Length: 418
Image (tube, rainbow, N blue to C red; front, side, top):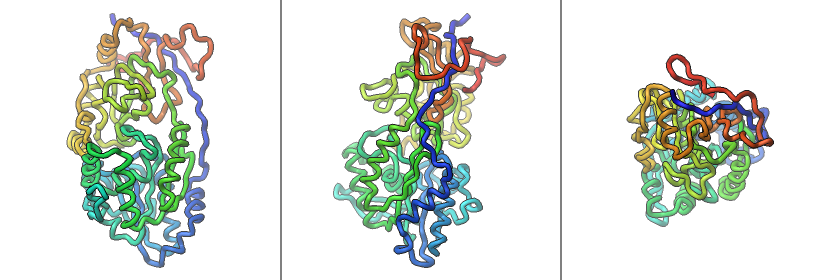
């Protein structure tokens, strides 16, 4: 009979700044830029939509479309997501439609293509790729969520600049820039490529989105192109301050119900689980130290893209069966991270996976293991933690909902999602 720790269900409380009316806020932000001074009647405006599961993205996109129409412009949507969606035009269109960004809902055409135009080279000799349809437009509005990158650290990480580089660069650009990272710093590539894009590609404005720890829209800001770098630096600091976190940084076994591209570029956010600098070992600058990670499934919206599964040591056969190996391979090769597609140890049920995982955490007995069970890295308000975290602790920064109780396995030796 296997031994397991007792578990508590807890609720964390984070700061909850929230935009109540995202459509009105988007419209007001764009109105402040006076874009009517630049957009002439019947000029086309490409609006980017990426592959991340951004809260309210369909409503925000529709508001941008309606604002462009109010200027007598002709808006259209461009999927901007590097190699995601299996690196096909139809796959990328399907991805954003899965977020509710359909032609019917937002009120304009979606023009999806993997073709790019090389608009120039950077001073380092790096060719700058840009989506064909966006390049042919009279103007481009770049939308993106500002957050820490899962693999790089700098003044600018994931946001408007990344959308201009990787998103609008499509597979060809993403592959080029990830190759360049082997020779130049992430910051150097961002600055040099962005300078070319802003000079050559008729960028009209940016829509920066920051979310709170509850995966809700906390801030929407329309930004003039000449202010992209300055404002994104400041918004990144705010995004970091609003991020959720695990209640304890040291974890023997982290159980993750689901990973996916709609959750994070690495399936599960390395800013939450650690392993930002090394796929299987926490480094000094990581926010968490998880000895072992067990991934149970993929999100439906990721459409089989299991990028990041290779960061875990354990998974289920049902999870492996749901993997689209082609889209996963393309994504991981394009990002120069083939390890992200590697398959962990595979099990038929949770009981077997957890049993083996707890055999590999060192001298700690299974019933004394530090175990945390989360839904995914976007939703950390509620989770389960093992009783060892609460032993000899009278005060803690969360609410205990119930417990302690045994891990509840059903007849198929599976556990419930958080």
